[in-house]
Image (cartoon, rainbow, N blue to C red; front, side, top):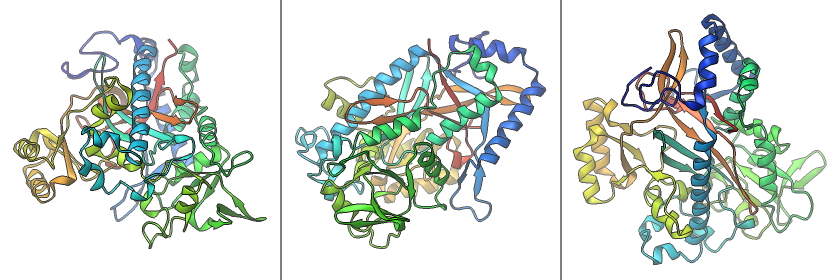
Length: 475
């Protein structure tokens, strides 16, 4: 089922029989009637349409709200594989939190010469107003989405750390719900770890980070930019699932040193605000004065201990792609251990030697914007035309600080269901991590994004990718 040089997670490298985690699924699939499976795939699409699971694609003139394609073949991870991933993710998230505390306090890592001072000082994601501020419970990254790729049986790489406002967890939950609905017999035959308690764990984890001003059961809110945001479905879904208030900036104001929301009984203080609004738009008094999405004065309340903001302002510097290239040093500096999960080798284009190498090898590399996301503003060299490479070369030369480059990895494939049967497609994985002062909780599985076009390496939904359910087996 595919290129023998690529690692396929179901078949390994050209094997005749499925690998261990897929044995049960393979037996089931071979016994299934393809007509029934095609009908189920259509039903799954109808479920997503009826539920309203869509996302917005920016920059398109018409019909910019799309259904995310869902594939009915689960991605299956063994208990042994997951244990290694869990250890590596937890180590990395602990290091990220320690790094954030350090750069907003004593900056020991800069004094030690492990990260250059200019990488922090000149970084637009660094917030000087957070210097000396310690968030409630010492947690900066309450919710992290760690993007992983796989190249072999035991070879995993971290592609990026999403530490600002990682999205996609609603799709993880809906994918599972849909599979349980469509194929209950599969879950009877396979011991799959549950993901359904994520909203309760999120609520508990956020409540554990309540601010000093909170005296009773914490009131939790989700701050959304509103219905026109690409992830609005997720904001509303999570607020509903964890029993939190869904609020917009105009619903909130500062009252008696607290951030309070408008209710029919007047204004009620919010203790923990899970914000899905970027730093720049969070507080027009302290950041972008033109913002209508945030709350005037919320940063002052936060610094005085009147509210918890998750994730903390200023965490964006931890998922900056230039800082990413220092993660092996960051992990070692704060944990005293080598990184369990490897980084993808990265060239920093602001360094003259690296830039020269990248310019000479553009057709073989993936080049990304330092602050880019969603698959926008990147060059996939092997898939680009000569014209696209020439245009990107000009961008690189004019603003090298804005880019990093990485080799094109031989990403693993997993099967998707097509009219002709199973076909291999490239995937990545975004496990979701919850951090509280008491524990780090990693949901078993995460969001698998799949490139639906044959040979494509771009899995982002905004670029034509889809999603599938991710199974972590109990044993």
